Length: 451
Image 1 (cartoon, rainbow, N blue to C red):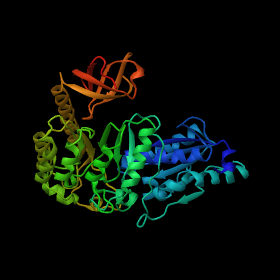
Image 2 (cartoon, rainbow, N blue to C red):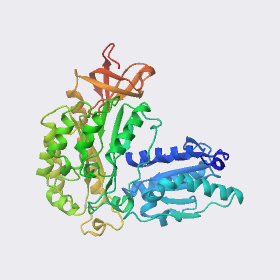
Image 3 (cartoon, rainbow, N blue to C red):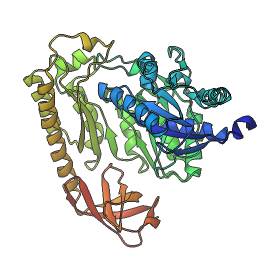
Image 4 (tube, rainbow, N blue to C red):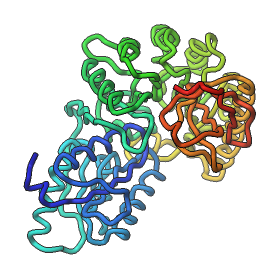
């Protein structure tokens, strides 16, 4: 350990926007700071450094990232304010212009961020506190970037742990800025994934969520996601393996078989749809049709009707007509979705879709979003009502909404509240579903079932 860093007793706060991959990398950066002698504190509390791990998937994400940087500067006026993550990688100039920001570090610089910040802070202190303003931009191209694993010991504040197995994307969908922010697809060595999983299990985590930009593209040295799942399932003490988002083209017979052959793999799929119109899918450069999508989904749901199925749906893509939107509604009605994530199309500078004609007016996008979200709410209630009377294994995560209740997730991603004490945290309890109240699902613990 660098004892010079240790003597500083630096405190660091973090806030993470966006995906589970970003959250995993925040944990990696936080542990890197701790190894240099720093203390990690809740974001917004007095600290020497505030790190905002940004997102750029939509214009709203960019706005929220800037908002958090301003909040960090207001809450800690003397702190070093650091912007990192996808927005920092894709548009460092926008963050450099913000008076609240001191350092801009792209995704390419995350592995060395802790050491860079500590050294920068040392120079800043030696010169006395200076006026706030960007004094360093560190963003390198990602074209030949290696895979950075960010090994972590634990996932603080969470019962479940995320595990990064893949980064980047080669797809280049016409609306998406993520390849610019994350670079090409690259995968983590299988042996390294297994070592990280065992480390997280040793840290007390019973469920691991596999995450990345495009985990269905996982593959190195001839391996694939199905192979990796089977290896993880052999780890003693790992009770649950949950997949992040998987593209429909990668939900193959082999992957479906790997999901269904062991009870350790959660019966929960999140498979992005984006649109139910083949015309719009083609304009989006999505490599499947609505018929392909339905076949992929049924590879699992035909064998397990209790599987939780979620999807992403984009409304208002350029040129989307009422007929196209109706095709999306029809497909959603035909498939057993348990929840929907609905997004308004958001033009991303530099993407082909941003320059397309027939941009859908904002009021039309909002109307379609409201309608689709209402459908999603109805599907969620219907799915959970069908579970009434069934017994689900619940991994207890936190206190429930009411005093004397706890809350946790079933394998199919249904959150259930039931009467219980805080001592049940990180235990798996068999719970009978007794009903639902709006977005809340209520259960009753089976006596003496916790393990």
